[in-house]
Image 1 (cartoon, rainbow, N blue to C red):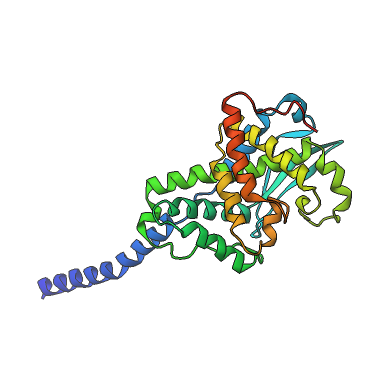
Image 2: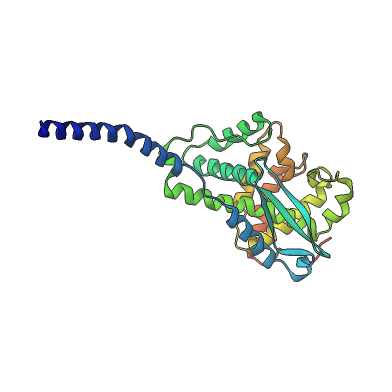
Length: 275
């Protein structure tokens, strides 16, 4: 009887393990299929971008200018922060925006093994319309999409995308756009400055942001992919105005970024004629 009871215990234990193991495997798989928290990374990137600016452009900016807010909606915008008697300029970035850029970067990386995926995701985002959050990329279960090599590629593209948009928001401060137009923005309402900026002013700020990023060691490839994604959208969701004016020619600007990169490496990209 004792041997029978032991055998029964072993059988029951094995059955329980068999029931638990799939759920544990599913949990481990789900955990693996998540992006790491990028809050510290984005904050540090803001500090690095500040350090690589010319001294004349650092004036009035916080040395660690990025403030990450726990908001689900995608948001990136230049802000001012009161610190006692001083007012500092910086950039507010939401957790939802970081998530959106993570997914766009991943879609671009996947596109290298599944051509057309990036364009489909761009159209998917456009059709979704923006709402309060940005849609997850579809059909992400394929294990090839989560290899170390794929995620390293995703991280590189993410750095380029987030770096350009943070640098752009900083340029709106040190080139005087924010102070010029802040009076036209309703109090306590994050209206994109790009809804007000002239296209020529935004294009110049992209040049400044490209120089800032390249000086910091961030290539423009990710930024070009981001502009290409928005350019593919038949109707641009509201969050795209956080990055570019609604009527901006992003196909042209994507090509121009490559020109800026080539000029940078030949010593011809500068802001001596800044305005």
